[in-house]
Structures are given as C-alpha cells and as structure tokens.
Length: 237
Image (cartoon, rainbow, N blue to C red):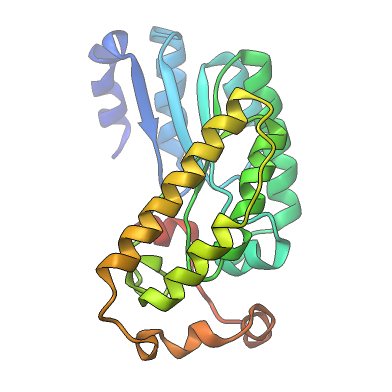
C-alpha cells in the first residue's frame, strides 16, 4: 500500500474508535507511521492497538506514542533468556526486557493497558508459569494465543501422555493473588489448563511415537545445534 491508500483513510479516521496494527513488526512498517500521524492529527481519541515483538523502540516511536493513545501488546513467550531466544531467533532478550519496562511505564503514565500475548509451544510450556508471575509482578495483563501450526511446535497435536504431564505440572503451580491483574492472569492460566485438558481428551488415540524426535532434545541440545525453531510472527501465521 502506498501513499494513495493512506490518503484514502482521511474520510474514515474521524469515525474510528479503535485501529489495530499487527505484523510482522508494526514499528518497522513505514506506512503505519503515516497512518498513526494521520490518526493523531484527525482523531487523537482513537484507541490504537499494536501487537509488537518488543525488539524495536527508539525516540521516534516514543515521541509518537506520547502523542497518541496506544494500547501495547508485547509478545513475550518466555522470561528465560535461552528459551526466549530459541523461540524468537535473532532477538536479544535483554533488549526486549528493557523495552518492555518502557512500554509498561508508558501504560501507567497514560492510563492505557499493556498486555502480554503468549504462545504456549512445545519449547516453552515449562516456562509459562513464570511468565504469569512476571505479568503479575509488573501489573500487566496476559492472554494466550493458541498455535496449531507448525505441528512440531503445537501442543494441540501432542499425545495424551505428553499433555497429561503438562496438566499435572500446571496444577502444581501457585500464584499470589494480590491485585486485579493477578486474578485476571490466574484465570487466563486456568483457561489454558482447560484447553490442554481438551486437547488431551481429543488425542487419546495418539501414541508417544507421534511426537517428532526434535522435541525430545533438551533445551541445551537445541541451542547447541542452533536449530532455527521459529519466530513468534511465524507461530501466529
């Protein structure tokens, strides 16, 4: 889409209540900046929701966000550095955590929600309870994005024994319920358990042999093999 498309939005923007931008990475799309500037100029009350991987944050983006009403959804599939960087090949965990802190503080200053979308995968399911604790500690909401493809990374297609291990592990977790954020996030986690239970019921006929061999490697082995697992954007696609 070129400038003509951006200009065609002029007649619609005054009537918008919310505009949602995903990607790829929205903060790397030049035309999005043109649209955001037009929204801020014509209808600054619009809720602008952005799904970002959190890898890109500079002064241009910060200035734009301060002038608009941005609801930030920052994808964080693990707070374990090794697992995070295994899932999101090429990203630097420390950079994402630093950017997350800025986005979190932005939401607090502007009284705007900050949310963490999480994809439960075969490579990160053991670390998800810590993502819940991380969200609770930072007083942000989270939600789970369920992935069916690629099947090698999807929990939906695992055998019932594999899924039962997940259920038992999740049921042993305990969380402090101190805030409304905590309660909401705990509820989302309970919903995740319910989905895993449904997948287990659906997959009773599957044997453990159906699990791809790549899933049997340890995290350390995968890292040493430098397997290009997946990016979050590919998981959502």
